[in-house]
Image (cartoon, rainbow, N blue to C red):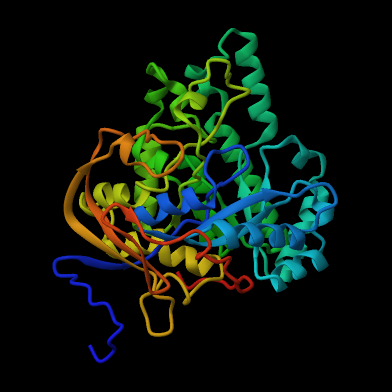
Length: 419
């Protein structure tokens, strides 16, 4: 090389892919991962950009929440980061406040339809959606109907069926379908771009697909647990390990989601990573109404999708890159800085060995949860080297990047993606 400081990497027999982007990660708060341990798990799994959410403190503005997150990212993160404020009170998300959020470099907010507060302030949330559209903000939404979920869970508890083996029954597909229908209608009324987080069922996907055919800006994320696991896990001895919201569904739902990835109607796979310890997840006091939802998934998400998706022929390598990197970059205001290998883009690169087969082991997990629900699974295709903005930050099992080298990325306002 003409540059004596250049590092030459032999990529013979390897795949060189853009760094993964996971726009649905929960760090800090109730979980045991911070930005440092979350980054380590992500980088070891080929993900160079992660995310985080935060509810607003009393009186806190959207911009103040971003500033608070940025100070923590500056000290802790190794991966790059995007941030999503959670809006529980729509009065804090005026059009002016949303425009200020864009100016501060973040262009998404998250709303939980599954919380009863949404039904108490529906009109105000719809007004907020109109402001989001005008400001260029993408709305992330957890689509489960609060009334159906709360009533169903309460009925099961009253019948003596409140233990976690009944979790799938406590949050039925009907709750997800009702919420997605409702959210789509709100998109139609306001024009707000909608990103449905962790969609789990065939019926809900059909609603979203119909919206897309009508030209509505509705985008779908699913997460790995729905691609790899089914509701039979709740019949086993440790149902608490598999609790997520919505719950695990049937094999038919699983197949529909894989088909959605192949057909381009499921746009992103994201982890919804929440790091609990195994002991926390197995707390026997949990019920279908009160439980710890979520699990650690950053480190093995991409290898498992590659192994069970690309190698099995369910999706192509190009589709793998789209749903784990490029589509998220386009949806979240990062493209072409992220999600591409191109002149002028950040040098976020991952060297994949498409032939390496490993068994997932708890002791290899870099998350502070220190376990994986997929332990014992054989996976073929692993990242062996990860580069974030031109710096080698992970190589063959070792994290080389230092805490504080990650950055809170400045994102552009919403633009309709070309997919």
